[in-house]
Length: 436
Image 1 (cartoon, rainbow, N blue to C red):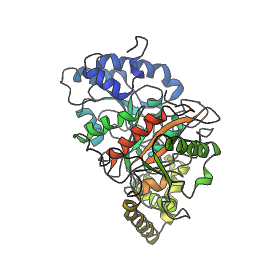
Image 2: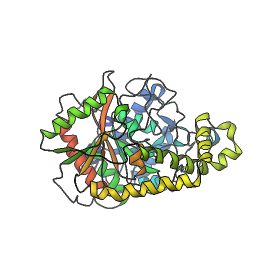
Image 3: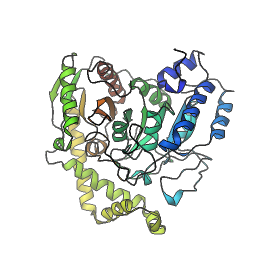
Image 4: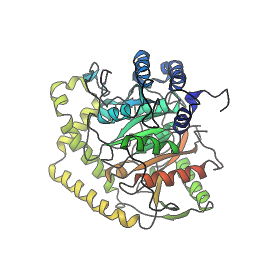
């Protein structure tokens, strides 16, 4: 490793292996990460809660223990809707601005058990919905970083931490990863426990993670699951299905051109490409996701809406009111449509190994009063399948662009494997790579 390399710049997999080999220590890594946080936090606003003393207290404790996993000594940012014992957890809401839980969410507890260090609580939109927090886009402070996992993605993008947690109900992992040029992974629905996480729509809510390299994903996933990755069923899987979705015309020209060019490039790299359709052509799956999110979300937030509506944003109140107007019959119809297409997915995935589709309409929009449009994420969250955002290039404004890779339900390890193969090919893509 070059002497000029700061340890906070290492991707997760490299830091893990250097710590295990004894070439660097957790204290050295953490010191560089904290230095970066202190240098960039005022400008970026990635953290809701950051206490250097609490972080070093954790380090002092784990230095007395033997490593239990590759995550030993790795600082991780925690989205501020996940309860963290003794650390302020606001849910991005004024209602909970002073809430300090006495327990850890299961995901946080498992990270601690693996030997990770909780670096702090990262900014979230209000209840992980649309009302923005203070975080700015690392590439351009006048552009949104996306939501709702805005602080986590910014902290990883700016090398404050090598990994951070997120959640997704519509597009809260994949979209910010696209806007900030990092790897974003939304797990299959139910793959990780959401106990201790502020729930919004139980049929949709899923855990996710941000890293800077696709090779990082297996480490964090397997450390939390407590088991090695299952071998992918098709090691040489190379069949890619391009899914334009019914919303293709809502993608910016630069995003469409990138996808078309990348597909041509991958076809020259021994991948098999074919166009494939998923879902009704009228976008009914997107509408179903909106109905389910509103119906379940308004009920999840019933207590807060009843007791403190004056402390809630107009965006969240509008969603709650939409949920009240969504009939139970409409909700059941949306669930039925979802199940119909979930049952069709195995046939679709018998023809291809992975689906490739837009992560976002294009570059991060200018302005901080919105977090962007999750139009290209809703249907995949609804279908509960695993998704990975892969950074590829830059758009006309110099902001990151990439693609979303989608795999079969509960075949996350296979998706991660083929994502690594595509990521390796993308490193030679003529238009560059945001994370390099």
